[in-house]
View 1 (cartoon, rainbow, N blue to C red):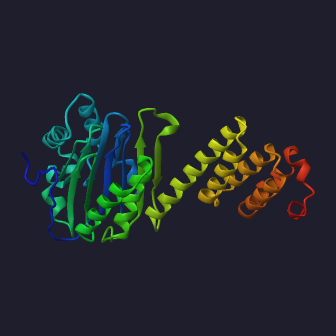
View 2 (cartoon, helix red, strand yellow; view 1 turned 180 degrees about the vertical axis):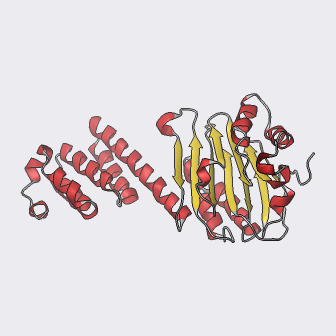
View 3 (tube, rainbow, N blue to C red; view 1 turned 45 degrees about the horizontal axis):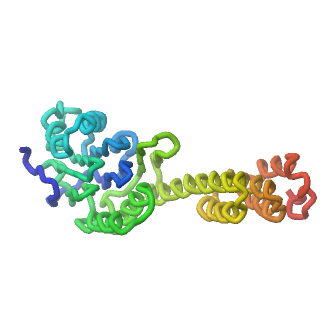
Length: 313
């Protein structure tokens, strides 16, 4: 067994350096995913790995990118998370001249088993540690304190809805509890479902002043798009009340995206809601005047083109 290897321990030592905090989890539908934030560039490209029905892997502090694909392969072959972590550390390979003491890794399986490790070098941060629980693991280094992981754990347990929402709630809670001590730069949200395809979520903020807040905005935009797709299905099945509700929800989530207003305008015209279509085109115009003018001139909007609100475009 490696020094510091523990399934649900907390480790705390001192000295400054890198900073990352993350949560890995699987849900009852066997969707698996990761939410992570760091003060380095493009965290989603190397730290987070997941496969629906197989599990989730996080490799951070001094990331060994081989851990992700290899960890998922070991899970798929039937190893439990503790065995996977033990194998990864034993076969570390000295990536970039470092050994397992530089790794912080967590593995979660769809059956709820979770295991995490914080190596000695990773533990020698301002605050570093992990907590692996049933169905998820939270871990971090260079943090404001143990309260960051406690907040993430509580938020994940209390949140409802799809796994992406629960992971995002945990990341936001960690940020609100103090997050990283050395600043922030990138964040990512990855969810792989059993169904795959459009059901999966893969959102990344590669460099931003407030990456966690920007990641939330991206998730809102994705969900706004989903709401409009639901509205379109409702129109086709002649459920106008459902369609109107979904359009309103989409605009509430994604009102800063011109494409949301455009699709709303077209949907409302198809529902013979001319006033609503005009309102949506005006909303689009605030964000993208040139494209809104092109839309207004489309034959679809001929019945409302002379509306005073549109003639000013």
